[in-house]
Image (cartoon, rainbow, N blue to C red):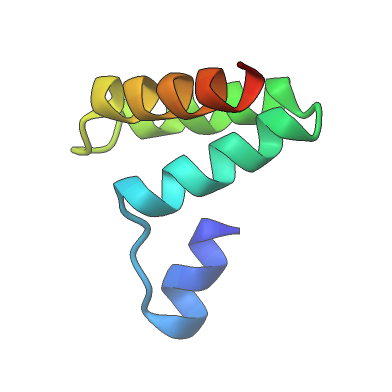
Length: 64
């Protein structure tokens, strides 16, 4: 999906984009896909730890 965005629309995903997609995948039960995307992010210059902290914090607020 991200490669198509980059190719067709010259859009580069950022920390916000990844956060939204990973959160959505987790909420809809696609944990393996979310994990795969996270592993891809680890190779990217984005700060993966910041992303995970944001997602966990957000999801915990939703659950409480």
